[in-house]
Amino acid sequence: MPSRSLASEDAVRPWNAPLTARSEAEPRRRRTAVTARMLVAAACTVATVLAVAAAGLAWRLELSGLGRPRDTDPRLPYLALLGLAVVVPLAVTVATYRWAGITNWIVPVALAVGSLMLFWLVTGVRLV
Image (tube, rainbow, N blue to C red):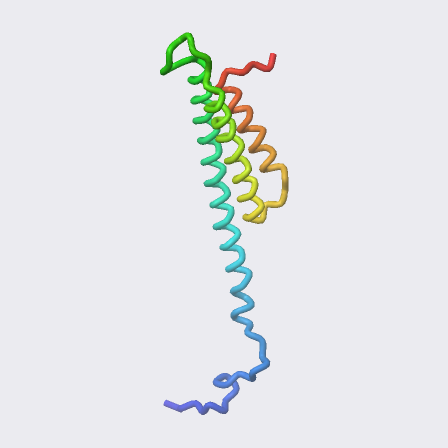
């Protein structure tokens, strides 16, 4: 078995030679990070839709008077908190989309409009 010396070309690399293996792996690592961030953004989208649906259902139950005496008015601070429970997840989702590198505004705007429509559907608001 022949032994290789350290002076051969493949054993010692010059200090200024480019690292081709590292530069080839870099785009793959970047693509994986973007994919992971997009999965986080998708999970945030699902959580936002669930939060909007839950807040809409709680809003409707509060307005209908379920769980309190019939002659009392709806609690306005509670309704304001439910409104905040719709706005905050939408803002977090938009921020998550920006963090994930999705700079196109059509996706967060579509999510906001869809969440608002879901909220109106659950609460029973009629546009016509």
